[in-house]
Image 1 (cartoon, rainbow, N blue to C red):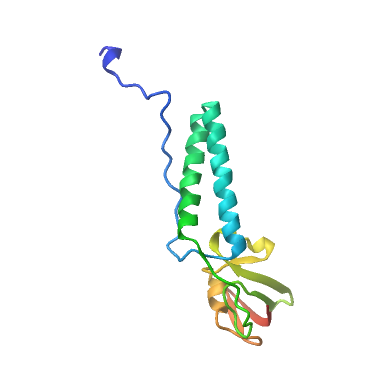
Image 2 (image 1 turned 90 degrees about the vertical axis):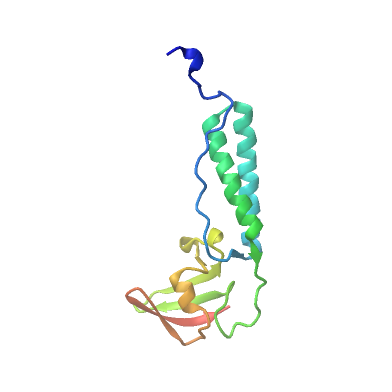
Length: 154
Protein backbone atom coordinates (compact mmCIF):
# COMPACT_ATOMS: atom_id res chain seq x y z
CA UNK A 1 0.00 0.00 0.00
CA UNK A 2 1.25 3.42 -0.87
CA UNK A 3 2.21 5.75 2.00
CA UNK A 4 -0.06 8.34 0.40
CA UNK A 5 -3.06 6.42 1.75
CA UNK A 6 -1.80 5.93 5.31
CA UNK A 7 -2.91 8.60 7.74
CA UNK A 8 -0.15 9.57 10.09
CA UNK A 9 -0.91 11.25 13.37
CA UNK A 10 -0.73 15.00 12.95
CA UNK A 11 2.42 16.27 14.65
CA UNK A 12 0.41 19.09 16.25
CA UNK A 13 -2.36 16.90 17.63
CA UNK A 14 -2.63 16.35 21.37
CA UNK A 15 -2.59 12.94 22.98
CA UNK A 16 -5.94 12.50 24.72
CA UNK A 17 -5.46 11.02 28.18
CA UNK A 18 -8.46 9.67 30.08
CA UNK A 19 -9.96 12.00 32.66
CA UNK A 20 -8.97 11.70 36.29
CA UNK A 21 -11.85 10.17 38.23
CA UNK A 22 -14.06 12.75 39.93
CA UNK A 23 -15.68 11.80 43.21
CA UNK A 24 -19.40 11.17 43.27
CA UNK A 25 -19.65 12.83 46.69
CA UNK A 26 -20.63 16.47 47.21
CA UNK A 27 -17.59 18.69 46.70
CA UNK A 28 -17.75 20.44 50.07
CA UNK A 29 -14.61 22.50 50.72
CA UNK A 30 -13.27 24.94 53.25
CA UNK A 31 -12.20 28.41 52.08
CA UNK A 32 -8.62 27.06 52.12
CA UNK A 33 -9.74 24.11 50.02
CA UNK A 34 -11.19 26.40 47.36
CA UNK A 35 -7.90 28.34 47.31
CA UNK A 36 -6.04 25.03 46.88
CA UNK A 37 -8.28 24.07 43.94
CA UNK A 38 -7.71 27.45 42.30
CA UNK A 39 -3.94 27.19 42.83
CA UNK A 40 -3.88 23.71 41.26
CA UNK A 41 -5.91 24.97 38.29
CA UNK A 42 -3.49 27.88 37.84
CA UNK A 43 -0.55 25.45 38.08
CA UNK A 44 -2.13 23.24 35.39
CA UNK A 45 -2.76 26.27 33.16
CA UNK A 46 0.88 27.32 33.55
CA UNK A 47 2.07 23.79 32.72
CA UNK A 48 -0.24 23.81 29.68
CA UNK A 49 1.26 27.09 28.41
CA UNK A 50 4.80 25.83 28.95
CA UNK A 51 4.03 22.55 27.17
CA UNK A 52 2.54 24.45 24.22
CA UNK A 53 5.60 26.70 24.01
CA UNK A 54 7.88 23.66 24.07
CA UNK A 55 5.69 21.66 21.65
CA UNK A 56 5.76 18.82 24.21
CA UNK A 57 2.74 16.66 23.32
CA UNK A 58 3.04 14.39 26.37
CA UNK A 59 3.26 17.31 28.81
CA UNK A 60 0.42 19.05 26.97
CA UNK A 61 -1.78 15.98 27.37
CA UNK A 62 -1.02 15.75 31.10
CA UNK A 63 -1.64 19.46 31.63
CA UNK A 64 -4.90 19.34 29.66
CA UNK A 65 -6.12 16.43 31.78
CA UNK A 66 -5.19 18.30 35.00
CA UNK A 67 -6.97 21.42 33.77
CA UNK A 68 -10.15 19.42 33.07
CA UNK A 69 -10.02 17.84 36.55
CA UNK A 70 -9.37 21.04 38.50
CA UNK A 71 -11.86 23.03 36.42
CA UNK A 72 -14.54 20.43 37.22
CA UNK A 73 -13.63 20.50 40.92
CA UNK A 74 -13.80 24.30 40.98
CA UNK A 75 -17.16 24.31 39.18
CA UNK A 76 -18.69 21.93 41.74
CA UNK A 77 -16.99 23.31 44.86
CA UNK A 78 -19.34 24.28 47.67
CA UNK A 79 -17.62 26.35 50.33
CA UNK A 80 -18.95 25.37 53.74
CA UNK A 81 -18.75 28.25 56.19
CA UNK A 82 -17.14 27.47 59.54
CA UNK A 83 -19.69 26.46 62.16
CA UNK A 84 -19.07 28.19 65.47
CA UNK A 85 -21.13 25.59 67.38
CA UNK A 86 -18.59 23.04 68.55
CA UNK A 87 -20.94 20.97 70.69
CA UNK A 88 -20.89 18.26 68.04
CA UNK A 89 -18.55 17.30 65.20
CA UNK A 90 -19.26 18.98 61.88
CA UNK A 91 -17.46 19.75 58.62
CA UNK A 92 -14.48 22.06 59.21
CA UNK A 93 -14.08 21.21 62.88
CA UNK A 94 -10.84 19.99 64.41
CA UNK A 95 -11.36 16.91 66.55
CA UNK A 96 -8.93 15.67 69.20
CA UNK A 97 -9.10 11.90 69.68
CA UNK A 98 -7.69 9.55 72.31
CA UNK A 99 -6.79 6.20 70.78
CA UNK A 100 -7.08 2.95 72.68
CA UNK A 101 -3.29 2.53 72.33
CA UNK A 102 -2.67 5.68 74.40
CA UNK A 103 -1.89 8.06 71.52
CA UNK A 104 -3.70 11.34 70.94
CA UNK A 105 -4.46 12.57 67.42
CA UNK A 106 -6.03 15.70 65.98
CA UNK A 107 -7.81 15.88 62.64
CA UNK A 108 -9.58 18.73 60.87
CA UNK A 109 -12.45 17.51 58.69
CA UNK A 110 -12.11 19.07 55.22
CA UNK A 111 -12.89 18.49 51.53
CA UNK A 112 -11.54 15.54 49.59
CA UNK A 113 -8.95 17.48 47.58
CA UNK A 114 -7.49 19.17 50.65
CA UNK A 115 -7.35 16.08 52.88
CA UNK A 116 -3.97 14.75 53.98
CA UNK A 117 -4.13 12.62 57.16
CA UNK A 118 -0.35 12.86 57.59
CA UNK A 119 -0.82 16.63 57.92
CA UNK A 120 -3.84 16.38 60.22
CA UNK A 121 -6.65 16.82 57.71
CA UNK A 122 -9.29 14.22 57.03
CA UNK A 123 -11.72 13.97 54.10
CA UNK A 124 -15.36 14.49 55.05
CA UNK A 125 -16.26 11.32 53.15
CA UNK A 126 -13.72 9.12 54.93
CA UNK A 127 -15.11 6.39 57.18
CA UNK A 128 -13.62 8.03 60.28
CA UNK A 129 -15.08 11.47 59.51
CA UNK A 130 -18.49 9.97 58.80
CA UNK A 131 -18.33 8.09 62.11
CA UNK A 132 -17.43 11.34 63.93
CA UNK A 133 -20.18 13.55 62.47
CA UNK A 134 -22.78 14.43 65.07
CA UNK A 135 -20.79 13.03 68.00
CA UNK A 136 -19.94 15.05 71.10
CA UNK A 137 -17.02 15.22 73.53
CA UNK A 138 -16.85 11.96 75.48
CA UNK A 139 -18.40 9.82 72.72
CA UNK A 140 -16.44 6.91 71.31
CA UNK A 141 -16.27 5.72 67.72
CA UNK A 142 -14.78 2.66 66.07
CA UNK A 143 -12.09 3.03 63.46
CA UNK A 144 -11.12 -0.36 62.12
CA UNK A 145 -9.98 -2.43 65.08
CA UNK A 146 -9.53 0.64 67.29
CA UNK A 147 -11.81 2.61 69.53
CA UNK A 148 -11.38 6.37 69.69
CA UNK A 149 -12.73 8.78 72.30
CA UNK A 150 -13.51 12.38 71.37
CA UNK A 151 -11.56 14.62 73.75
CA UNK A 152 -12.23 18.03 72.16
CA UNK A 153 -13.98 19.69 69.25
CA UNK A 154 -12.77 23.05 67.95
